[in-house]
Image (cartoon, rainbow, N blue to C red; front, top):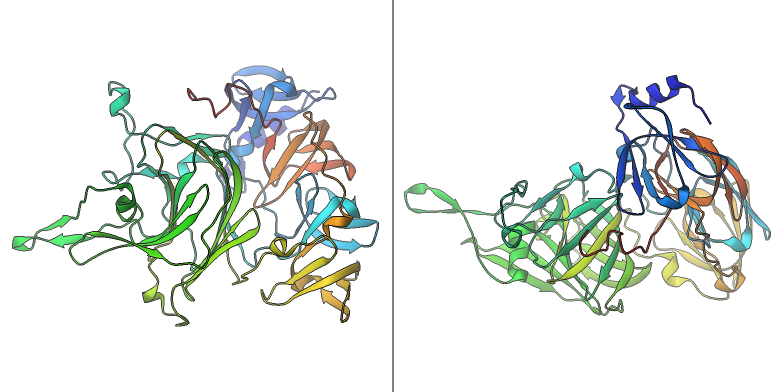
Amino acid sequence: MRRNPLIVLLLATCCNGVELKDDLLSFVNGDQLHGHLAGIAADSSLLWSRDDVSGELKFKSSDIRRVVLRGGDPLKSLGKLSHIGTMNGDRIPGNIRELDDKRVVIETEFGGMLEFPRNQVGLLAPSPLGGRVLYHGSFDPNEWSMIDIEHPDGIPAPVEDVKKNDAIPQWKHSGSSWYWQNEKTGTALARKSGLPDRAILQFEIAWKKRLSLAVGFHANFKNPEVAEKGDKKRVAVVNGAKSVSLPKIFGESYALHLYSNYVMLYRASFDDTGRPLLDRVQATNSNLRLGDAGKASVEIRCNRLSGEIILFVDGEFVAQWSELDGALGDADGYAGKGNGFGFVAQTENSSVRISDIVVAEWNGMPDSARSMQVDDADIVLLANGTDRFSGKITGLHDGLLKLEGRFGDFEFPIAEIAEVRFAKSGLAKVEENSSDEVRIRFHPLGRISGLPLEGDGRTLRMRNPSAGEIDVGLDSAVMLEFRETGSFLDDWNDEF
């Protein structure tokens, strides 16, 4: 399939006055190739173009791991966070229009009106986070910095003649994920701004061996200056245990330490002499059951103004801390003084992967509908964060969701609903995804998967297992995933 050279030129230059980055093609053997997605051929192979190559290159889809589009920058971000969740793991963004006992209809920006069987939809999320998404990634490694105690402003680039044992360990970026695979610890992956006063921080984590990861949030990444004789000042430096180093890395902040079987929250600060302090914040529950190897979805909800900090893992409530004792608006009593966040592995010879990082405004909602999901009743959680109802959902028409409850029938405006979780007993069995499928990720949230059929660099026709054939516009897409490979040459290889 040939494409008009003018389209290639337009994609490679500017959109709305901003120069577009190259697309990045990653192969299952670890090779990478910059250029531009030219399309998908009828045999599902991928077409690729480069400025220094005449004609289009053609690659088998079985050899491709992923394509990061425009460096992770969309041509147009999706306007709303509303989405549905299907049983194959997709989160399909759009406005939820209709629902009955047979089907769910959603209007999407990328593919128009789509219809899914009711038993394939486990989640409705009209207002899932309650606020704007401020960050979604990581697609561009230049948006992040790596720091340690000796280099709070950023670790310098490695020098070629430095021995391997003397080199500063660093995180590595591939595709849309960050990887830590080092014998030593102490290097933090950080974003020093972007976390609002009322924030949701979500990320996917995978690990090998034992999990020990510290997550700093509402961090200011500042170390105190201590007066010396003659009014000179010096930066306080303390050499100590790994836990003591957290204030030196994150500054005045909170540090959530995730282990395989429990979690602890600390206040990180300094005393008047510049000595780092790490005080544990007590919680009614601190247990986790994650195992020595695996993956999990982590969500931290934190409110500097009210002092609330809540942890969810895989959608289930884990722990809650209250820092201000009801003193609403007393931000001085809240240990986190900044707007940054970061990650640092705390165990030697441990492998960690961080991906799907989302920062959003939090509306104060303390619950997740998934934490209340049951076998024999549908759960409706309203966007005010306090009201929830159970029963049987009978339909959605004209913007009103109808629920038959134990104590009466209800109608809820769809705009006032945070999440709906359908009864497990009415959902279809989860089937294993086909190895030939491609998963399209959107900005700021959302994913849809299916068998790729044909397309150019702006549109991809796919066959979704539930909705049939769809023409998916790629303006809001940031990545095409062809493989979640388990190859010995993938990013988990010790010699990556």
